[in-house]
Image (tube, rainbow, N blue to C red; front, side, top):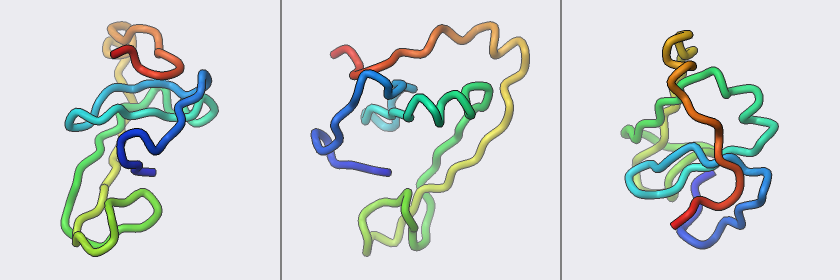
Length: 87
């Protein structure tokens, strides 16, 4: 889901994955447990969106692709941060 800044209440169980164009990106802990070995690539492309989308009427949508991390990449990752990102 895509929320405007300040409209999503981050809980202590949400996992902070980083930023997308300056906006914090979180995933629920249960979903993270499933995807933690996977690199997620999120792009904005032309087209009409669905549930994980930009505002209606923009003609743009998110496109998510994924691939498994290699063993070497996994070894370089640090532990996941839970809860709100530090400012």
